[in-house]
Each structure stands twice: as structure tokens, then as C-alpha cells.
Image 1 (cartoon, one colour):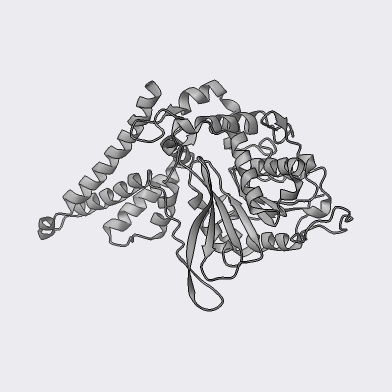
Image 2 (cartoon, one colour):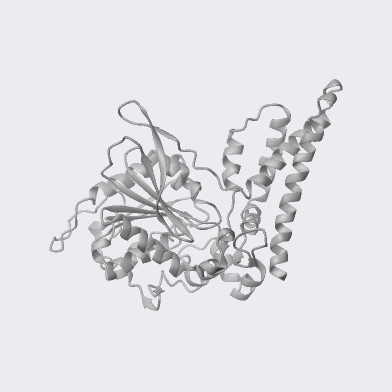
Length: 430
């Protein structure tokens, strides 16, 4: 009950701040106050509007906002977001463009389960549906999953990816962004040994912690400084009574958001002060840059306690993927078994979450893969977000990733000799 009370206390604080914002906005917006203009009332209304919106977004799952797409025929076609595989902790979605012929490239985007919803990759999806059939993993908020559904840790996550890959078939190109990169690599290795005919054509790993110790960051240092007991005591709570997952142990989204904001507290504080001033001057809009960013950034989800704790323990502390000793259901997954799936890594030179060196470590683990099927790219000047959704992604990384997929789209031949040149001409690993 103690941890459940903590969970409900956080929700109470969030709800109270939302109410305070709405109350301030309503009070300062009374028409009668317009008779005597007062800058203090304008500021109060602006503060209320920004505060209410910010705290309200914390418990709302963002909409994909992808409704139509203009095809080569010049017509706007509806985008139907279909659930093709439904599971308790996450679904496989397909962005089906009605009336458009099926595209030859099939891409599975593996979204991170690290506090934000899969909609964080909205810009990535929009850029890929132009000429691809795009599928994405849509992870569920743990607070909405009944305890009767059981546990969900990194082994279960890996097996979910295995099932999604098997469903889509061997013509799939997998792109894993950030947190799921190590587990996508493990899932591919699992398929290579258990069901080789279901392996994807390519695997692209973007900014993921394959070897967190390769280039330490504040994130990896935190994982090494604290004990698992400290994490369980300070980060884990039980879902309150108002949700379907009542009693489930989780790492609450609101607690995660506190950690996110504390990493750049000054920048976030200044951003909200500037937005309040813009609202007071009548310069803000419902879909301005501030609201577009924070509507997504503030929308957080709970993750199961066992997933969070096993991620910290096995990926960051014990480095099971980096040491190639990761196990699933008691069976060791040997990354060296990957012999046909072309693997590419993408890193940002200014990434302060998964620093350069952490992701490219995957190529050294693929000992059974010829150099011709390995490639890496380091994007100059790009931070973590930019390598999958920003200008760097749009202008440079996306074309390189698609080029890599095209170069490895043919069915692999068991008796084929390794090519003399790399699968992708940019920075192939040696």
C-alpha cells in the first residue's frame, strides 16, 4: 500500500496543478476584466493556459496525426492505422495507405519503451511511408494492463520482437531506435538459430546502447552508481486503484518525466517562461513549435518494474549483450549466429544519451557476418533525437538507410561468396 499511495500522490499533484492552471485561466479571462486592462491578469491567464496544457498532456496518449498521404497520382489517400498483431503489452501496427499499390520495401520500426509512446517516432514514420510499407511496435502503458496478464521483462520484449518479425516474414527490413537496439539484435540472433528462414533482410540500429561502457554518459554512469536495491526502493511503485493495472509494479511515467526534465532543468524552465510570455502577448498558437514538442515530450507511460529493472541490470550493469551472454528462457542467444542479415549502425556525433561507440559495437559482435554485410555511419553534429527524426535524419541518414536496404534486398544465397565491397559504401566496419 505504501508504494500505491506514492503513485496516487504523484497523480494527485499532477491533477491539482492541472486544476490550478484551469482555474487561473478561467478567473483571469472573465469578460468584465476587459473593462480595466491589467497586465497581471494577462500574465495570469497565460500562466494558467500553459500550466493546464502541460499537466493535462502527461496522461494523454498522443494521436499519430497521420490521416492522409498524397501519392504519385496526385490524389490524397487515407492512411488507415491497422493493428495486425495484438498482444497484452504491445501491438504491431501497419500504416496502410488506402488505394496505393503495395510498396516493395517492408520496414519494421521498433519503437523504444523508455517512457514515451511510439508516437515519438511520428516524424520517422511520415518520412518512410512515402515509398515503404511501414510497421511499428506500439507498446502499451503498463498502468492499463491487468496484473492477470503476467510479467513483461526484456526477455519477453525480445520474444515479442521475434513474433513480430516472424509475422512479417523474411522480406522485412528492421530499424530499431535507441533503447530496443540491443534486444532487436538479440531477437535477430535468436531467429538465426531457431528459425533462420524467418530472419529479416537487414537490421539497422540507431543510437542504441549495445555496449554502454564503450563511451560512458550520464545515463550509463547513473546505472553503475546505484544498486538494484536502491532502484527498486526509489523508482518502483504500484499502480493506483483508478487504473486497470491496479497493483502492478511499475516505473511510473511521471517519475520518469521528472528524471528527463531534471537532466536539462534550466532549458525546460526557460522554454516554459518564454511560452507564457508569448501567450500573454498573443503570439502563441495551438500548434506552435513549443506545443508540438512538449505535447509529445510530456506524454509519458508507465513501464513494468521487471522490464525497467532487468534493462538496467542486464543491459547496463552486466552488459550481457555487449559480452554476448544474453539468455532468453534459459537459452543463450549467440549473436555470432547472424550470418545473412546485413547490419548497419547509425550514431550521432553529439549524442549525449547513447554516445558514439555504444551502437557500432554491434558490428564486432557479429563475428559470423562478412564485412560486406556490415556498415556504420556517424552523423556529424547530430544529437540523439536528430538521428531518427530531425534534419540529419531527413537530409542524410534516411537516404543512406534506404540505400543500405536496397543493396541487401535480394534473397541471400547460402553458397554465395562474400562480396568484395561493403554492403553500404559509407563507413563500412572492418
